[in-house]
Length: 239
Image 1 (cartoon, rainbow, N blue to C red):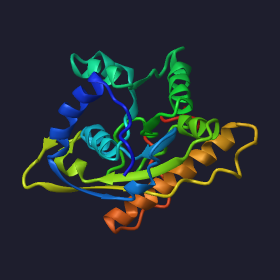
Image 2: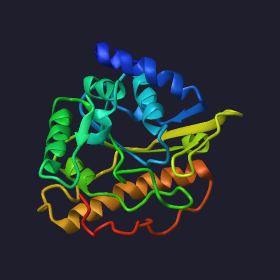
Image 3: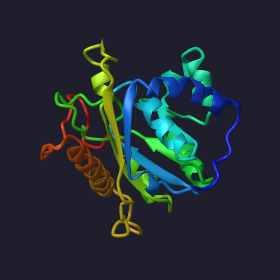
Image 4: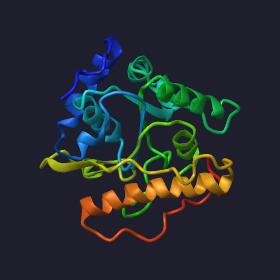
């Protein structure tokens, strides 16, 4: 195993906060060796619970990298947690404002500086009644196409059985299994060099989320739905 990526005070503060939360579940990891030891990388994940960020942060940190999460700007205003999130390299996402492009600029910069960026393209916890990935926003495709870094699909399942954000049910006992599985880097060579149109962004986004969905189907040992669930009000070209 390679040398751990250098961290600082706020990363250690985040670790002290997140590691205990991750212990709520019995963690099983597969494909962790696919995470590159150095250099920029984009980790594309599904989102099923408010416990996902602690679980995913610990997963990445245990693999000797420092995760940079893209998160709603409102989370950066939460006392203590917001300070930890910002100090550890979190990237605020501004939606519905003129600052929306700035969040992608920060993510582009992080990738070009050799950082590992974690993104939940759905933008929020899945509203699919059975927990499958929703139709995702296309910002993930811009990051994937405009940066020459590995784009890794990953799925995680089980955090929702501990804390369901929509029913508000918190059931830590008995301890549940939480799976995190990383797939092979997605080959996007067929899209690179093409004009970045809305159609290309949608195709790449759906390709990435299909790979995530396939990994989730393997974890759940179930057949995934053929179409992504689309919440009411989500536009055709969500960014």
